[in-house]
Amino acid sequence: MSLLGILKGRGPNGFGYRSTAEEVTYGIDLTGRTYLVTGCSSGLGLETLRVLHLRGAHVVALARTEEGARLALARHAARGTPLACDLSEPGSVRACVARVQDLGRRLDGIICNAGVMALPSLEQKYGLEMQFLVNHMGHFLLVTGVRDTLADKGRVVMLSSGAHSAAPRGGIEFDNLSGERGYGPWKAYGQSKLANVLMAKELARRLSGTGRTSNAVHPGVIRTRLNRHMNVVVRGGMAMVAPLFLKNVRQGAATQCYVATHPAAEAVTGEYFADCNIARPSRDASDAALAERLWHVSEELARRLV
Ligand SMILES: NC(=O)c1ccc[n+]([C@@H]2O[C@H](COP(=O)([O-])OP(=O)(O)OC[C@H]3O[C@@H](n4cnc5c(N)ncnc54)[C@H](OP(=O)(O)O)[C@@H]3O)[C@@H](O)[C@H]2O)c1
Image (cartoon, rainbow, N blue to C red; front, side, top):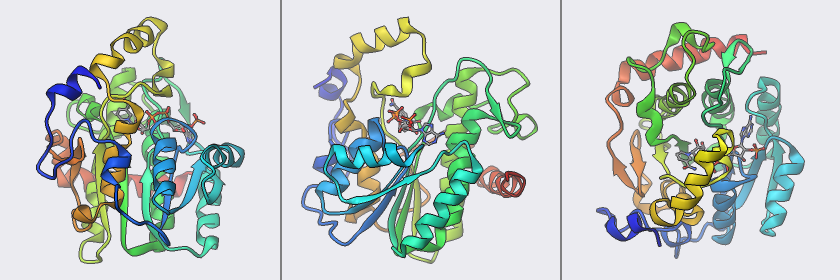
């Protein structure tokens, strides 16, 4: 257990920093339930797939390629449906939406887990900065596309990050979504992760009164392939401090599994979670007007992204 894990206590619901995805789902029978998970080919997504399957769920496993999703399911001998969904390609996301609709399954949960972090230099596609495109717009297209397949008490879980507070001053640079003006790897990542919290918040508002929920989570800091774009010195440093200061992958997947499945979280909506408990996000992330504006801009972009 890491040093931080020893120091940090449990939250009001009895879970905390040290809790693992297996612990927070212990005793929960997910037989007959279906969960869609993006980015299931590695890290937190792969662990989430494993634990949902362990509790009896059918996992609709999304990866960049169908083969990647099939391999992820095979790795844990998990029952499920492998689907291709490249979040940087609107055509791939829309094809995935159609496949999900054709499955004829009600989704008990959608876990928007896939992500890219801190691309060292500006990358663009469709005129958008890549992290905004993958982390936010890809998931916006997916979730709005499959929204009608959510079960009566279906839950949407957006993977954000504590790094959402590294977003530019004022939150989202609507006049610079291409990232061309003053690109910074952490600023761009922070903006995309702020967009994840804002999307969860606005979706919660739109789902209110339906029994369906939408929340955002910060999983903690975990050494996964997410750091692949960081330089070798930083990656080496992370490897050294990991046992002392970072969560392991089993702990990292706990918060999203808790929010997606635990009975105590069934009616909680519009919140931001960390260490399996409700936490307070940045001021911009709590700005309802900003959340609504992002939704409208995303709808407009979605019409353009063909
Ligand atoms: N690890 C942390 O410390 C940490 C902290 C805060 C928040 N998070 C968030 O947690 C989530 C999971 O991260 P992780 O740590 O598990 O990282 P990871 O191991 O790198 O997993 C990221 C997943 O996203 C997928 N992905 C990337 N680009 C994609 C695209 N264009 N289309 C579809 N899938 C794509 C990756 O697929 P490929 O393998 O094919 O690239 C991979 O399966 C991310 O949203 C991240 O922002 C992580």
